[in-house]
Image (cartoon, rainbow, N blue to C red; front, side, top):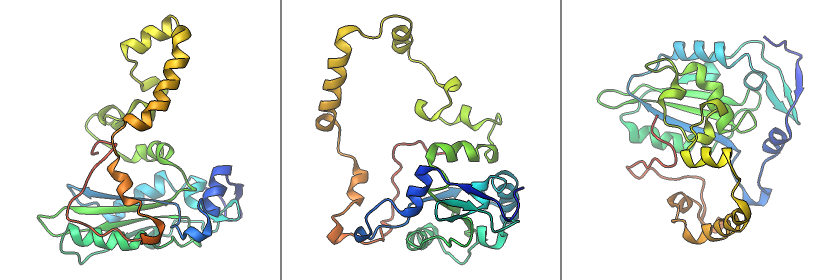
Length: 242
């Protein structure tokens, strides 16, 4: 466990996220990863706090505060009342969604390590929920996936073998090699045609790909508001439901 006077330099990417990745006149939100999960079984708040304190708090990125390009330890122990809170009184999932949409535009308190988990116990037949907020300076999708892996259990005990993740998100020893790729790697690299084909593929991709519906959230700046109302349905894209 790190002592209260510990300081470490942030990475160049971490410093960039701390400073903000958009010009101030764009009035963009803090670069925070917001994840809302609905659960078949509610999570006990004490069990969640125990797991986070055991697995995540020992990392300086989860136990330190940001301070001008440095990770600075100001808290010798994890403040459970701040980092893991339970919010009740919601009637259904739509009410939770609306609360989260309003909460996610608020910046995290930088006097604490810049992450927080909120649990929502809902009455049957609705599913309970968990809302995690993690500042991008702590990590990105891939690094956070493997950081949280020790906290995830499933039948067989190894979530990476059960969840159909894309090859790019798997460690090298877990990646499946397609027969064509295996043959190419053992023989020639594609010869003189490979470079022109790669160029044409890159040039034509913007023309051939289908419209990405996620782009519809990016309204013109003059029309943008930091609130996307819950429309009564959810759309899962890019990754499978976990």
